[in-house]
Image 1 (cartoon, rainbow, N blue to C red):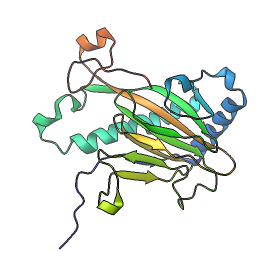
Image 2 (image 1 turned 60 degrees about the horizontal axis):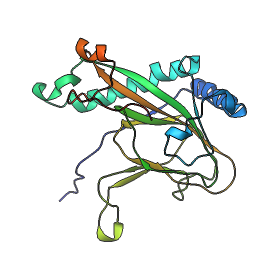
Image 3 (image 1 turned 60 degrees about the vertical axis):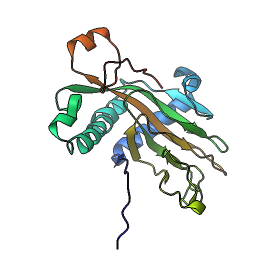
Image 4 (image 1 turned 30 degrees about the horizontal axis):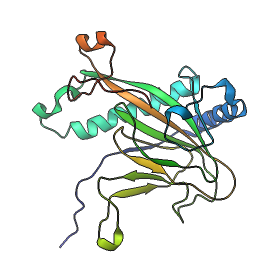
Length: 229
């Protein structure tokens, strides 16, 4: 006999270079030292966090993050899932029929007691990049961990398992997942701050009639899809 795990969900996990992590740490430190210089993103976000600030897309470190990690990561997710499908099942996800674009990027500063409730995002892909993590967030409790939620309630006593996955934040690690994937961040106790970046990306079909309308759309239909956080 063997145990078989059913219904997998695909996410992308990667690690930044130490150089880029250091650059993003310096950028985050600069933004938090002068928060009023960056737009406040908290009014558009679900998080109950001390600071959530939008980042400039044209900053050199941000450009490196987007072009070397986040956009390739979204592409890797698409190819990992879609290339296993028969040709007639690929639809608009076939190569050269879409382009990927990051539309939002922001810095999360989580302090003791702050949390992010269960939520999902707009667009096609979302993800998180861990920049700074307090030493007490070590996996010995749920404190400060990123939780990915499945469609069923998790209850180990009644054998409902596999419906949540806790991810321990490690500086430099990043995760990419479909924007519909619900997730949350647990509060933590103790000192210091937990810094992360989050983003939204859209996959835009390469159809002239759609591009001219300037809308973000679902690749499964021609219905408009909301953008933003």
